[in-house]
Structure formats: C-alpha cells, structure tokens
Image (cartoon, rainbow, N blue to C red; front, top):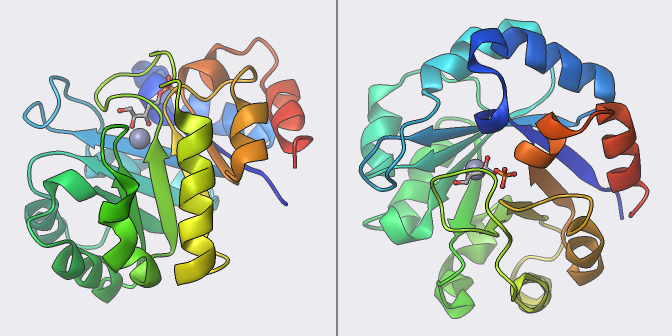
Length: 217
Ligand code: DX5
Ligand code: ZN
C-alpha cells in the first residue's frame, strides 16, 4: 500500500504560507490540505478558499479543501473556480449528501465525505459508491493539535470493510491527531492518506517525518 502524506496548512505559519508550502514540497509531501472554517460550525475561523487560489501557483501538488462550515452547498456556489483537486464536506452538515456530492463532482473536482468521530459509520453506507475518498476525522473538528480519538483503529477497520463491499479501491484519509506515534496503527487499520498539521509542521526534520510515514506502507 502506498502511503500519501498531506500537509494540513492549518498548522502552517500564516505569515509565510508560500514559504511553508515550499518547505513541505521539499520534504516530500504528496499534497496540501486546506481547512475552511467559518466560526459557526466550529468555534474557529481558518483558511479561506481564497488561500487555496492564492497558493495554487506555488506548487503543482494536489490540494484538498475541507469544508468545516455551516452549509457546504452555499460555499460551493459562492466560490467559482477553485482549482481544488478534491473537496471534502462534513456528512453531518450536508442537508442532502447526494446533492452535495453531485454538486462537487459537477465542478470537475473529486469528492470526499468527512465523518466525525461520533458519527455511526452505517450513515455513510448510501453514499460510499459515489465517493473518491472517505475522510475520517480523528478529532472533533475545529482545532489542530488535539489528541486522537482512541477508537480510530476499530473505526478505520470497519470503514475498510464497508468500502471493500461498496466501492473497492477508494482510499481512507485520516485527519486530526495524525503523528508518527499514531500513524502505524492508522496504516495497519487500512488508512492510506495521512493528513498532518501540527505534527508535520512541528517536526524538526520534515523530510524524515515524511520518510517514516511512507515507510509504513
Ligand atoms: C481539524 C482539521 C485538521 C487539522 C489537523 O478540524 O480538519 O485538518 O489541521 O490538525 P492536527 O494534525 O494538528 O491534528
Ligand atoms: Zn481538515
């Protein structure tokens, strides 16, 4: 299994975003993750889709946009061309997940559905076959640097089995609490995309961080 490491820019230096993008590229990261928070769904305000647009010229690596906000459909209408490679919406915030998925796909963007730690995984079942990725949050959405929810290994294993039945081959991404300490358990359970904010940007040797993560595959 090939492990992909995605740098979550929530933990980057906001005064030097382009510089941190360059550092992550140099370290061997596979993609970048943008958390869009509006201060309503979560008590935090974070990156805007405008950051993604502004940073697009600085790397050709894929960008994933994670919509942690009140109404994903509204934002999709507000922002025109985003150049995101994949857009992830919160299952718990979509009034009608099928419509949200179709809306994202219509933009020519891949679609990912994000599942919070307290969401029973059966709720994802009707939608798995429409998705390009399942994103499993390892923490409550809103902030970086939180410890990972203890049941993640079991949840990922259960999700893997459901994907195997519904749409074999789509990857499980994990977001929140991903570090060199938690990654071996996540990969053993079936995760392929590791999204890391504070652990990645806090690592003294980012290339070594990426190397160790990828060696788990
Ligand atoms: C949490 C965000 C994550 C966050 C993860 O709401 O969706 O993307 O950046 O941060 P760490 O890796 O610090 O847990
Ligand atoms: Zn995220």
